[in-house]
Amino acid sequence: MRNKKKIVLSGANITSGGPLTIFNEALDELSQCNNSEIIAIVNSKELFFKSDNISFIEIPNYKKFVFLKFYYEYVYFKDISKRVEPDIWISLNDFTPNVSARSVFTYFHNAAIFFKIEWRDILFSNRVIFQKFYYRLFLQFNIRKNKKFIVQQNWIAESIHDLYNLPIKQLLIFKPNFTLSNYFPVEQNENNNFEKKLVLFYPTKAAGYKNIEFICEALNVLSKRSSVKNIELRLTIDKDENLYSKYLNWKYKNLTIIWLGSISKDKVEENYKEASVLIFPSRLETWGLPLTEFAKYNKPIFAIDLGYVYETLQDYPYLAFFKPNNVNQLVELLSNKLNGIGIDYYIFNKRLSKNYNIDNVNVWNELLNY
Image 1 (cartoon, helix red, strand yellow):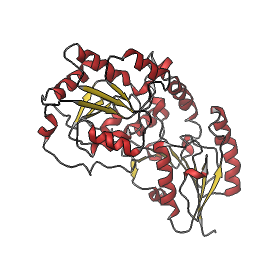
Image 2: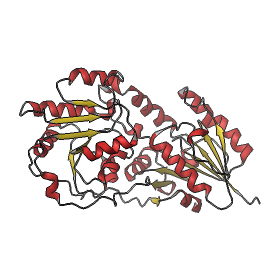
Image 3: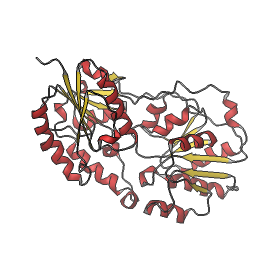
Image 4: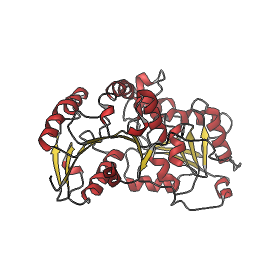
């Protein structure tokens, strides 16, 4: 029997954003396990946490073609697993690879399969539409070979169970390492003061499913009732970035939109501090990181009424919802905030789970218990 536990983490699709942070956290934590040998399959090792017991296999071509990914997941990784003989294989690429290992885990963090398609998505969210169908098809391959199929929220676990009839015992909820416990209590009436200038902030990317035009339509409706010159919408995209941003810039040129472009983490924090309200109308998220990041400032969040928001913000006291197809609800929220009228913030009384009793872990090392 060998002394070291061999752990493979495969995530050659990951190069940025939240998934990159999660991958590095996994490498950091698991490398600290006694007598562990980590093999990380990555796109470029320059992006990742280094340690004496971590070795890298680079696959820079992984993202070049969609169907090339399936070759790696179902053929190439099988050869690697036979050569390496891992105790644990953790896939961070959403799919369950065809590998030989004592225990296989898949970390799933793409909610595209649950995306509700609307006609405009053909123009502005075609990539997500494609992902919806190929993820839905290929996700089922090998899914029952997992010791645990890992997701970030209860609603995703329940949806996977219902969609693929995956046994509850094979599901595991692993929430990102974020918390709302750091927000600072303030009197609620401080958030209802009259606003001389209403600064709306939406950290986002130029994709149709991010639903930016929902905010713009609400501002258009509000402009017919009163002046919107003292309302400023800040977006972290460039007005000429792609077809979607060009469309927004053309259709809503009458509004005061600040096109910030891609900005640094520090600049995002500056805008959080300056914003009156965080607006979050995204139709597709697995977590919604800006919701958590903004909550520590204890200021109002106006968010779309979808399941991921409930779990991400839990019992945040200054959250107000608008229905996905009801612009007037957002109009009323903005009008009330602008005019200093009290807002009825949501009180969390919805049950977030079907009580399936799904296992939870809080750190990567806990996976070793399985």
